[in-house]
Amino acid sequence: MNIHEYQAKAILAEFDVPVPRGMAAMTSADAVAAAKSLASDVWVVKAQIHAGGRGKAGGVRLCRSLQEVEAAADDLLGSILVTKQTGPAGKQVNRLYIEEGLQIDREFYLSLLVDRSNEAIAFVVSPAGGMDIEQVAADTPEQIMTQVIAADAVSEQESRIMAEWLGLSADQSAEFHVLVGNLHRLFRQQDAAMLELNPLMLSADGHLIALDAKFVLDDNALYRQTALAELRDLDEEDPRETEASQFGLNYIALDGQIGCMVNGAGLAMATMDIIQLKGDKPANFLDVGGGVTVDAVCEAFKLLFSDGHVKAVLVNIFGGIVRCDIIANGLLEAIKTHPMSVPVVMRLVGTNQTEGRAIIKDAGLDVRWADDLDQAAKFAVAAARGTL
Image (tube, rainbow, N blue to C red; front, side):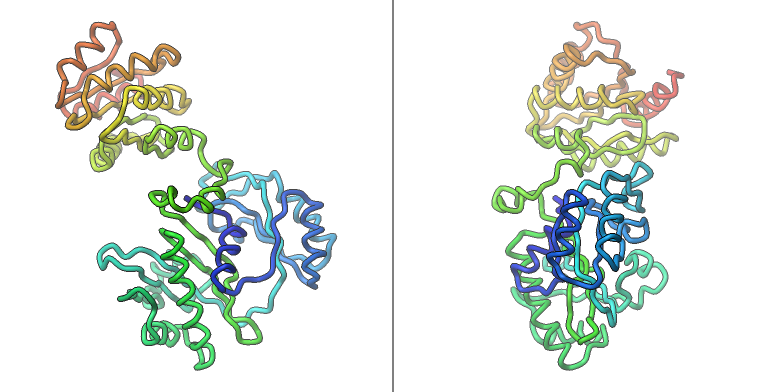
């Protein structure tokens, strides 16, 4: 689960990680009031969306007067911000963060993530902060260092290795050790999946401050991170993904035209791959999971049939725990309110496959049956193009 920058910085502050003074704003009047309250000579007005690259897209404005703050807020609120991470559709700006402007000496990149191969938390640091880390990795990978944390806390040796990599002085290295210790503690206690400071700045007076922050919470920990779960902004999420999550469905909207319903993440990925191999694109990732019910399958079909981008639906079920008759009955329930407005290609194999096929055939539904995944993908692509 993603949260906004201003929310992430509030969490950082709770763990004694230095951040600039700032306030959230929902209106231009709020923005001006926040700027007055901060009592600074320079302010930064930041669009709050769940995507990176805001600065390059014009979503971060440096203002030197209250009039400029108001003008920036008027311009940003309600606008559509298009960045590398939003896709061409962009995201609407509904919230702002007003921050005090600070004098920057240097900028670094720092993030924490779960290193699954080492079963540990790892820091990724680079002296090339404030830039797209992906571009740094592509152009100058020698500027990036990964430090795996071997124990439950960051040792002085581990923090010193990172500080030396960043070129920090002895005094700054001591401050850095405290900083990374607090970040590591935050990451563990808040069940983070990723925490990124880009940039982590060295101020003109020699102190380390998190100038920007991105925090991603592990969805599997939502049940015990109730305070963080309340920070969820549904306006930033695809409503279909939100609806799917309520029924335990793993759904991600994509930009293709073939709707997919599959059981198992691996099989879902393989299904999407073969659709592209056949020359088309999937409209979604949809894994119904192992313990799926008829009601959940019904909702899954409704999501697919109500998606205006979908030109054909491919159902690829390899029944083990999932029974094929559950999938069939889910389709029957769905069409009571959402008729099959696009062609449906089905591959039902495994537990109760005979019963599942019989249910659909007895209902007289116009479904194209496939014997294997290759044939199913071929049929789905042809159906989407109107040539089946």
